Length: 537
Ligand SMILES: [Zn+2]
Image 1 (cartoon, rainbow, N blue to C red):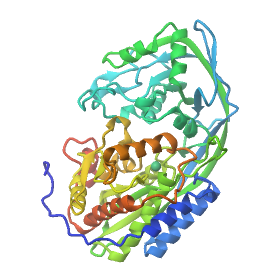
Image 2 (cartoon, helix red, strand yellow; image 1 turned 30 degrees about the vertical axis):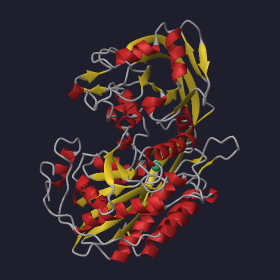
Image 3 (cartoon, rainbow, N blue to C red; image 1 turned 90 degrees about the horizontal axis):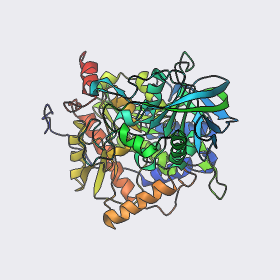
Image 4 (cartoon, protein in one colour; image 1 turned 180 degrees about the horizontal axis):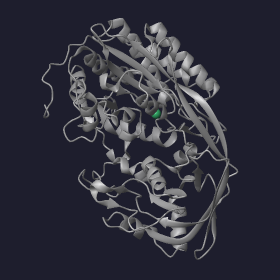
């Protein structure tokens, strides 16, 4: 037991009735081409949210937003069109780089056209301003109106341990691209270009290209994004090497320098130009929400989250297939919400209420969950905690589950309790450097203090061990993840999924049956937010 942890025993939970047919049929349906990859604001959304709400109703839930199954999430979409190549001048030779294979760019500003013209380029290392760590990559440099070039991840990426200024090899929020664009905007930069590098980014250029072309979505703001940079983008590492060379700099040397505390930003004495038009659309997308009202303490809530959206139409595969179906990511998690709703309803109401929340626009930056957390239907201070599900492993039954953010909260005790029945073990994620903790919907709740646990079936397979599990996971990441081939496969073995689903059931069921209020562990970055939000209770 860690410090301050409750000694309330974990409630006994009976084995759930979980339907494999619900899992397979909904996963197959939502990932069929008829749903066109479930992009927010499309006909695919209409079909998706209808299916989820009908299945929630059939399971015996009640509508979660008054008499509605939906929460409107106002979004703006901005799609860059007629993008010119990125032109670089002022160095030893003029260069230009093609939109798509060499660079991608978009805007967060609701402007009809964007022009970056002869904008001075400055290399700002990791682009981090962290006063509490005494680290400021923008110290002494004025980047107003300029184009900042930024490294992905954070400075102690690449170290072996989890010790260091920025959590060792574990990624911190400072390593996320969202943070880097936010900080560049705060510094007044006109444009921000992140240098892609497969290892620290944790995904290949194909993912950047497919995710950053096409409409980009934002939660609507009153100022239309006027406080953002005009252009945000990524460049291939090979492109950065050429730009640095033409500026008389060596990228590898500068990357090494940027890892040291006290690094000073480097003006590249080159200028960047790129322009494009913005096709701007506004729409309401929707979160789907169902409720299983608690028996004895209905105003205390346990929440399940899973995103229903995916990338829609995307960069075609060589065979011409241009629908990113998102079968694993995250038709499986959406199906799981329904299967769990059915199982909890069959078991009868818990003491606490259980919320089933299918959120939109996760792929666009966790927008649906962020919107819910900012505009909660049920107070976050009364939300005990929750479980997020994003992309089930389809590799078959595993001896382990992998916890993203293990050790962060007292929910670990619930997970371990849920696993012991089946003799499984909880392991910390092997690659905290990939920053998965900041990349799915639990984070939207966590940063406002609600303890959330996020785990997945592991790779230590009962049949084939880690070698087989790792090979399957590698195949998914390289060949399917965020591409047109994340498709339903009738040959999948669902035994592993059903075992994982039982764990998701048991953790939330225990939370719905206890009087405990598990918190973040002492010293965790989210503990203060929780203590504040619970102070009035
Ligand atoms: Zn996902």
